Length: 464
Image 1: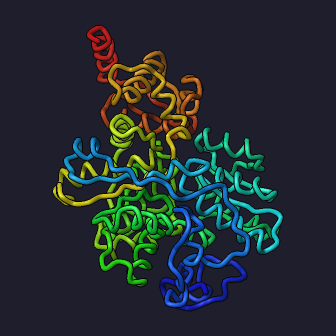
Image 2: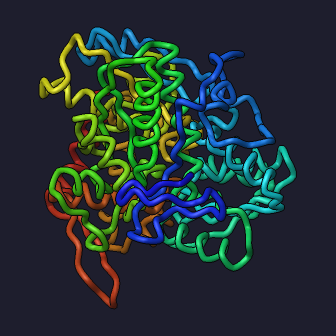
Image 3: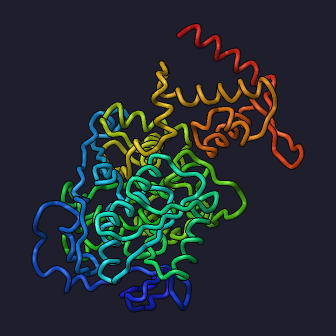
């Protein structure tokens, strides 16, 4: 059955729906666990090992998802000041992200139900996963993407022969479009925020962590729409209901400073909607109006955890540290968890002898903005992207004032427009540039302080 998390109303599994018809609350699958496990888990550690704990499907579509390693990050732990730190490395899935778990269950359900096509709105990973699994079984995969999306993820979708359509500046608008197209066309709705099966698939990450490690004291998860952190929380709660564990972890939800509506709702009891332009290099979590914020808040509050933000520069530093110390190349959204962990350790909210697990959701190979930065052979690795890109912006503005889109073109379009605007915001905050309105456009110009900074960068290069 599907059950509303808010009012408790129950509905049949079909037709598929994501929200309660009575109160509008989010629907999730409700299962009588006492009737679910009649025999022990068996077989290799992979996604379908947990089929008894998932909504039933006849077809079990698979590309070898799940069973990802839980890596003991000893060098990274030492650098942060922890005794025990683990990375749940979901980059080892077939398309290099945790969304392969959801794609396996959704395509199985779509085939069971006789669909020939599915549709998905996505920031990237979900679209890449669904495109691959649809190709496996011959489903037509329609993907709606926003203007700002990692090119590496887009390349995967194209390779798997998905039908891609751009709609909206960020994924919020893409989701609304996918919702209307699914109703109009009758395609299977595979958007993560609109299909409750996604939470069910992703809770298997918690099952695996339990089998690999037991129950950690803390679990850190990046947040976009909010469903992922709840997925893991639900998985651990089910393990307790099954009598397999007596303890539960505390959860930390992490968002970038430039796009943190869920953190705002949890910490300030309000969600900022439509009052700002969300911006971050962590494009996987660039969500302005998260549809599953209620789920995220439920996981954090019930587990007595925290919600906090980290800056894009802190994310980049963490990304480089994860790669340098542990040999794992994580996408920016994943790296935010390690950046947040450092903050919490420094604040003594997580102490040295706590056992911590960070979820690494996807591969940095998909995040082209970061790849371009890393290929520049900078001597100051942690500051390479910051200095090189900001220096280029200052050099352009030193020649003449211009607006954001023109600046993006002059930079060679090698980074996303969102990244350009994030740099402009940070430069303005430091007083290195200023803005003004002209002919309905927002122009940027370099300040005297900015010119001094440009000269200082030149001096620094002479010393290196």
